[in-house]
Image (cartoon, rainbow, N blue to C red):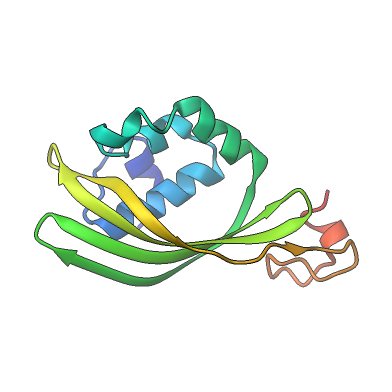
Length: 141
């Protein structure tokens, strides 16, 4: 399923994994309002639209891997890794995210992050996006 109908409000995420994927896609297109609105109401004040937009503008997401998804009643966890480039570095955001149903919709509550070292990408290195191009001819532009 494409995430755009969820992001545009045409349909709801059927489960927490769909919500997580739609949030990732929203970061890719810098739809900070959607990301903000998919936090639980208790977490929205901690995550301003401005801060979300600043992060989304700073990074260039290049891949998503979902490792595990578990749902029990109105709670769920999703373990994923999002690969991104930032200022010449290849970075990985690995998280086990917690979701709950609030107002009959899945919402992101919080998560536990697994740290990964950032890797400097040389201009002539293969691009981490998997394009098989050199970084300078792909995402370094």
